[in-house]
Each structure stands twice: as structure tokens, then as C-alpha cells.
Length: 80
Image 1 (cartoon, rainbow, N blue to C red):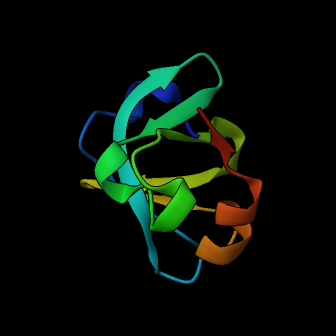
Image 2 (image 1 turned 120 degrees about the horizontal axis):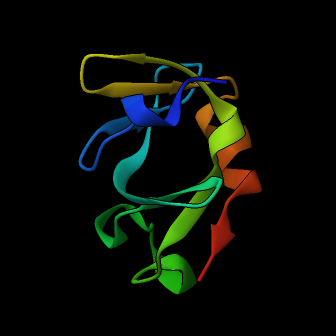
């Protein structure tokens, strides 16, 4: 797991496959809160989504790469 101090607001979050998953709004405990703008369509729209910080594989520049593909990470998201 990457050091949490490397994670910052507004960093792009991508899956292991390079597909955009979201943008960091802020960190909350062991979760990364994504911005509402990346919340998806339909019933998912307008909600914050969270991913486990443990999924972070690497941080390079302004990009956070996960150890899971975007589709798998999306399936593991929590919604509030």
C-alpha cells in the first residue's frame, strides 16, 4: 500500500488497466472519497463514491493507479 501522504485532493484515480475511475475529493480514514462529478449515471449520479485506500498500487505525478481494473474497483465502491 502506498503512503497516504502521497494522496492529494484532485488527483486522478485510474484502474490497473489505465481507465479513469474518478478524482479524489478527500481522504476519510482508510477510504478515498471521489468527487460527485465522477459519480456515474442514473441512480449513481450525485452521490459520493468511496474506494478502499488499500487498492492503491502506485502514485505517480498527479495520478493514482489502483491494483484492480477500473471495472473491478467500481464494483467494490461504496456509495453514500
